Image (cartoon, rainbow, N blue to C red; front, side, top):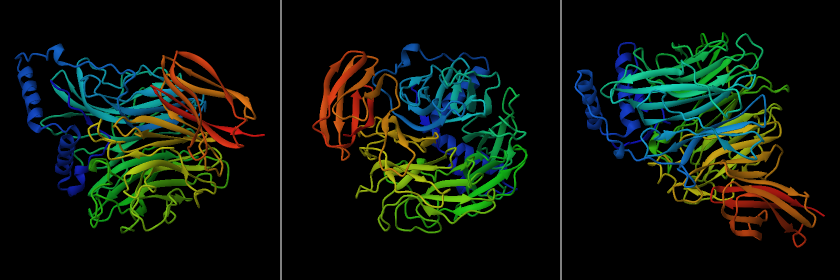
Length: 615
């Protein structure tokens, strides 16, 4: 059997075209699930029917031969990396030097590991990275993964880490399942414990249909001193016989697993609902937001609040209307150029301010749209709104990206974080510099006044990626649907899928940006094990200095110095180097004082850090 992989990172959007009413809720939900299965797997229905006929034969005690082992192409992930996209990341609240990121890795040559979400962890603030041995595949023997994804992390107040994902898989050619799983780690992400009850939810699929489905989960933990401290919440899209809805399941700190019944968040009268985001405020209130429409004409973001640990929610309030490609009834476009239509959505994120300043308890939201109630002529922008009254009301949306108005340049896939001092960071893909609106950098902006205004946008990447070629190695999935920025007390750390080689190879990248009204990036590098750019000594550089760097395996290496404009001013190494730690001398006496950048390029990737020349 040939493994055909479909990425499972987008919501169950077929529900948008169906009317959800009390009379036909079950039919709506069944239709939505059936359609999304077709969309997600991208497998002709006759192939599924063949598998299901095989199931019937097996169930009637007639042997169905297993595929010969030689028919399965085993693929080893090595120095030739597979494309990775759509990631989530977290900083361990108990240890800010412990950072984790996971992305979706597509491997069409391995049925058992067709779509993995490898977990990378750092214990030195992102200076070096390792990969956990954990593999997010179903625990049952004989499971063949045909889809999946949606990696997401959370951490409790004691630093216990949680990781969740989705698998869509065929089990022993007898059953097809859609499962949402979870694991935990108490050693910073090195190893992961899998409970006997490792399911947040699971549905069996029969004849391309199921009675329920579980999709697009986001996790949040209560790290406050509330009665629900260390409770883990999962907000998700959960259609079932009662209709389509945003719902919450939770895991109490002393529980061995998540509750297996859902608490409804969204009202029953929405004709479309999806894309949950969730946050816990300083009092332990659980906030859930989602994207929805009651008439399939006007689409909006909504907010609901639970003050009893996720047992019930207030009626939703509107955050803002959202005008967006593919959804809005008068929308001129069905997609953003270079993105698969099925991967285009407003990417809403909510966070709560836990700082001790004047903005403590404020809620912040960001999303993508090409306007509020109509197309505004600027392409898609990054919008932002704030609430100081627990979501009862929201500020008029402002645009974070500061490129000139009146030009059709797209900004999309935003992410949002706020640190312990109340500084906000927003990141996104940004096409402002490309007249053809196809090549994108990654950008960031800070807010130092509780989201009332944003500083000058900071270009994070030194080289743009061309979205015309970004999906050539992952079946058109391109960069997926979301990115992630995390923060420490002193740094913002954005993570994104980067395809700057423009050959379809996508790598997880990270940057380390000092929190200040600055316009430079401190460090930028591939999130990968095997190479490090460790230190410059002495620093700042006055005359002669030395760069310490290391590689785990022998590799061609380039070590270069560039100025603030990106011009190469010195090449320190250009050739094959042995494995190990190296110390390379550098004479800066010919350079004018200022900021320069050291770039280490190896077969495993590239990393860059700043260097100051001062006399």
